[in-house]
Image (cartoon, rainbow, N blue to C red; front, side):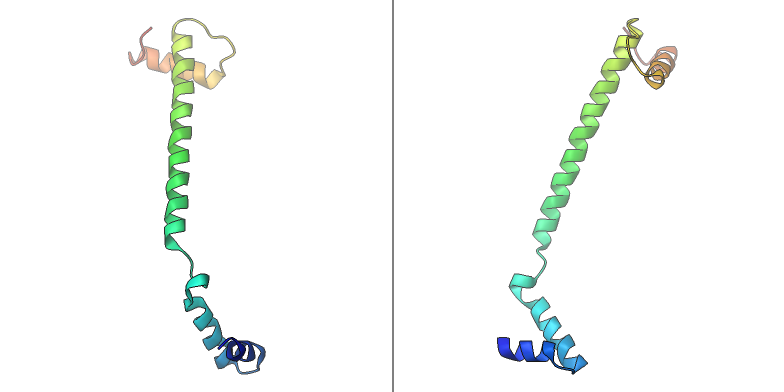
Length: 93
C-alpha cells in the first residue's frame, strides 16, 4: 500500500494524487486530534480567567488604597476610577 501511495503522489495523475492525500488524511496517525484542541482551548480559557482574577485583585487593591488616602504611585486612570467609585458610593474605606 505504501508503494502505491508513493507512486500516486509522485505520478502525473492529479486525481490519483488527490485520492492518495485523502487516504493519508483519513489514517489515524495523521488525523487531527480534536480532544487535544479542546484541552488546549480549555487550558487557555483557564489561564485567561486566572489573569482576569489577578488583574481585578490588583485594581481592587489600588482603588482601596486610593480611597483610604494613599495615592502613592497609582496611575491616573486608577485614581479617576477610585474617585468615581467613591462618588457613586460603591467603594467604602
